[in-house]
Amino acid sequence: MAYLWLKAFHIMAIVTWFAAIFYLPRLFIYHTQALAEGDLKGVERFKTMERKLYRGIMNPSMVAVVLLGTGLLSLNFAGYLSQTWLQLKLVLVTLLIIYHFWCGMLQRRLAADKNDHSETWYRFFNELPVFVLIFVVLLAVIKPW
Ligand code: HEM
Image (cartoon, rainbow, N blue to C red; front, side):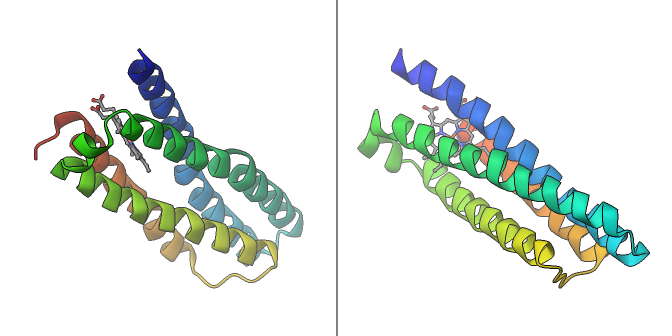
Protein backbone atom coordinates (compact mmCIF):
# COMPACT_ATOMS: atom_id res chain seq x y z
CA MET A 1 0.00 0.00 0.00
CA ALA A 2 2.79 2.46 0.93
CA TYR A 3 4.29 1.59 -2.46
CA LEU A 4 1.27 2.84 -4.43
CA TRP A 5 0.91 6.03 -2.35
CA LEU A 6 4.59 6.85 -2.70
CA LYS A 7 4.48 6.13 -6.43
CA ALA A 8 1.37 8.31 -6.97
CA PHE A 9 2.99 11.28 -5.21
CA HIS A 10 6.33 10.57 -6.92
CA ILE A 11 4.56 10.96 -10.30
CA MET A 12 2.74 14.15 -9.19
CA ALA A 13 6.04 15.70 -8.10
CA ILE A 14 7.63 14.69 -11.45
CA VAL A 15 4.80 16.49 -13.30
CA THR A 16 5.28 19.76 -11.37
CA TRP A 17 9.10 19.52 -11.58
CA PHE A 18 8.99 19.11 -15.36
CA ALA A 19 6.38 21.85 -15.79
CA ALA A 20 8.90 24.25 -14.21
CA ILE A 21 11.93 22.70 -15.96
CA PHE A 22 10.27 23.25 -19.35
CA TYR A 23 8.93 26.72 -18.62
CA LEU A 24 11.88 28.42 -16.88
CA PRO A 25 14.24 28.33 -19.92
CA ARG A 26 11.26 29.53 -22.05
CA LEU A 27 11.11 32.58 -19.77
CA PHE A 28 14.87 33.05 -20.31
CA ILE A 29 14.15 33.26 -24.08
CA TYR A 30 11.46 35.95 -23.60
CA HIS A 31 13.69 37.72 -21.05
CA THR A 32 16.54 37.85 -23.61
CA GLN A 33 14.14 39.25 -26.24
CA ALA A 34 12.95 41.93 -23.78
CA LEU A 35 16.61 42.86 -23.08
CA ALA A 36 17.30 43.18 -26.83
CA GLU A 37 14.23 45.42 -27.23
CA GLY A 38 15.18 47.57 -24.23
CA ASP A 39 11.85 46.70 -22.58
CA LEU A 40 12.87 47.42 -18.97
CA LYS A 41 9.43 46.88 -17.49
CA GLY A 42 9.22 43.49 -19.23
CA VAL A 43 12.70 42.56 -17.99
CA GLU A 44 11.72 43.26 -14.37
CA ARG A 45 8.54 41.20 -14.77
CA PHE A 46 10.51 38.25 -16.17
CA LYS A 47 12.95 38.44 -13.25
CA THR A 48 10.04 38.11 -10.79
CA MET A 49 8.42 35.27 -12.75
CA GLU A 50 11.73 33.39 -13.02
CA ARG A 51 12.57 33.78 -9.32
CA LYS A 52 9.11 32.64 -8.20
CA LEU A 53 9.06 29.71 -10.61
CA TYR A 54 12.53 28.52 -9.58
CA ARG A 55 12.14 28.96 -5.83
CA GLY A 56 8.42 28.35 -5.46
CA ILE A 57 7.85 25.40 -7.81
CA MET A 58 11.06 23.97 -9.22
CA ASN A 59 13.10 23.62 -6.02
CA PRO A 60 10.32 22.11 -3.84
CA SER A 61 9.30 19.76 -6.68
CA MET A 62 12.86 18.47 -7.10
CA VAL A 63 13.14 17.84 -3.35
CA ALA A 64 9.78 16.01 -3.40
CA VAL A 65 10.76 13.83 -6.41
CA VAL A 66 14.03 12.81 -4.76
CA LEU A 67 12.49 12.19 -1.32
CA LEU A 68 9.57 10.16 -2.71
CA GLY A 69 11.89 8.26 -5.07
CA THR A 70 14.18 7.49 -2.13
CA GLY A 71 11.10 6.39 -0.15
CA LEU A 72 10.26 3.95 -2.96
CA LEU A 73 13.87 2.74 -3.06
CA SER A 74 13.84 2.13 0.69
CA LEU A 75 11.01 -0.42 0.25
CA ASN A 76 13.51 -2.80 -1.38
CA PHE A 77 16.87 -1.09 -1.41
CA ALA A 78 19.14 -3.96 -2.48
CA GLY A 79 16.56 -5.34 -4.93
CA TYR A 80 16.16 -2.02 -6.77
CA LEU A 81 19.84 -1.07 -6.79
CA SER A 82 20.82 -4.39 -8.39
CA GLN A 83 18.67 -3.59 -11.47
CA THR A 84 20.27 -1.97 -14.52
CA TRP A 85 17.24 0.16 -15.44
CA LEU A 86 17.34 1.80 -12.01
CA GLN A 87 21.09 2.38 -12.13
CA LEU A 88 20.73 4.04 -15.57
CA LYS A 89 17.75 6.02 -14.30
CA LEU A 90 19.76 7.37 -11.38
CA VAL A 91 22.56 8.48 -13.74
CA LEU A 92 20.02 10.39 -15.88
CA VAL A 93 18.31 11.85 -12.80
CA THR A 94 21.73 13.09 -11.61
CA LEU A 95 22.16 14.86 -14.99
CA LEU A 96 18.70 16.39 -14.53
CA ILE A 97 19.62 17.66 -11.07
CA ILE A 98 22.76 19.27 -12.56
CA TYR A 99 20.52 20.87 -15.23
CA HIS A 100 18.21 22.10 -12.44
CA PHE A 101 21.05 23.89 -10.61
CA TRP A 102 22.37 25.22 -13.93
CA CYS A 103 18.91 26.81 -14.44
CA GLY A 104 19.19 28.31 -10.94
CA MET A 105 22.57 29.80 -11.81
CA LEU A 106 21.18 31.29 -15.05
CA GLN A 107 18.20 32.68 -13.14
CA ARG A 108 20.51 34.45 -10.68
CA ARG A 109 22.73 35.80 -13.51
CA LEU A 110 19.71 37.25 -15.32
CA ALA A 111 18.36 38.68 -12.06
CA ALA A 112 21.70 40.52 -11.70
CA ASP A 113 21.36 41.86 -15.30
CA LYS A 114 24.18 39.60 -16.47
CA ASN A 115 23.06 37.65 -19.51
CA ASP A 116 25.75 35.33 -20.91
CA HIS A 117 23.77 33.68 -23.73
CA SER A 118 21.83 34.32 -26.93
CA GLU A 119 18.18 33.56 -27.52
CA THR A 120 19.18 30.62 -29.76
CA TRP A 121 21.38 29.21 -27.01
CA TYR A 122 18.42 29.22 -24.59
CA ARG A 123 16.26 27.53 -27.24
CA PHE A 124 18.72 24.62 -27.47
CA PHE A 125 19.19 24.55 -23.70
CA ASN A 126 15.39 24.33 -23.34
CA GLU A 127 15.30 21.05 -25.32
CA LEU A 128 17.83 19.09 -23.23
CA PRO A 129 15.46 17.84 -20.49
CA VAL A 130 13.11 16.35 -23.14
CA PHE A 131 15.64 13.54 -23.70
CA VAL A 132 15.93 12.83 -19.99
CA LEU A 133 12.13 12.70 -19.66
CA ILE A 134 11.78 10.24 -22.56
CA PHE A 135 14.56 7.89 -21.42
CA VAL A 136 13.77 7.96 -17.70
CA VAL A 137 10.06 7.21 -18.22
CA LEU A 138 10.89 4.40 -20.69
CA LEU A 139 13.42 2.94 -18.24
CA ALA A 140 11.04 3.19 -15.26
CA VAL A 141 7.96 1.82 -17.04
CA ILE A 142 9.35 -0.70 -19.57
CA LYS A 143 12.41 -1.71 -17.53
CA PRO A 144 14.20 -3.09 -20.61
CA TRP A 145 17.26 -4.18 -18.64
C1 HEM B 1 16.44 10.43 -7.05
C2 HEM B 1 15.42 10.38 -7.89
C3 HEM B 1 14.54 9.19 -8.11
C4 HEM B 1 14.50 7.96 -7.47
C5 HEM B 1 15.39 7.48 -6.32
C6 HEM B 1 13.44 7.20 -8.08
C7 HEM B 1 13.08 5.91 -7.73
C8 HEM B 1 11.95 5.25 -8.16
C9 HEM B 1 11.50 3.94 -7.74
C10 HEM B 1 12.25 3.05 -6.76
C11 HEM B 1 10.34 3.67 -8.40
C12 HEM B 1 9.48 2.39 -8.27
C13 HEM B 1 9.77 1.53 -9.48
C14 HEM B 1 8.93 0.26 -9.52
O1 HEM B 1 8.75 -0.37 -8.49
O2 HEM B 1 8.48 -0.11 -10.61
C15 HEM B 1 10.04 4.79 -9.24
C16 HEM B 1 8.94 4.88 -10.07
C17 HEM B 1 8.84 5.76 -11.11
N1 HEM B 1 9.71 6.81 -11.37
FE1 HEM B 1 11.26 7.41 -10.19
N2 HEM B 1 12.87 7.95 -9.07
C18 HEM B 1 13.52 9.16 -9.13
C19 HEM B 1 13.26 10.18 -10.04
C20 HEM B 1 12.41 10.07 -11.12
C21 HEM B 1 12.30 11.01 -12.22
C22 HEM B 1 13.08 12.32 -12.33
C23 HEM B 1 11.38 10.54 -13.09
C24 HEM B 1 10.90 11.09 -14.41
C25 HEM B 1 11.62 11.77 -15.24
C26 HEM B 1 10.89 9.27 -12.56
C27 HEM B 1 9.92 8.50 -13.14
C28 HEM B 1 9.30 7.43 -12.53
C29 HEM B 1 8.10 6.76 -13.04
C30 HEM B 1 7.32 7.14 -14.32
C31 HEM B 1 7.80 5.73 -12.14
C32 HEM B 1 6.63 4.75 -12.22
C33 HEM B 1 7.06 3.47 -12.92
C34 HEM B 1 5.94 2.44 -12.98
O3 HEM B 1 5.32 2.13 -11.99
O4 HEM B 1 5.67 1.91 -14.06
N3 HEM B 1 11.54 9.03 -11.35
N4 HEM B 1 11.03 5.74 -9.09
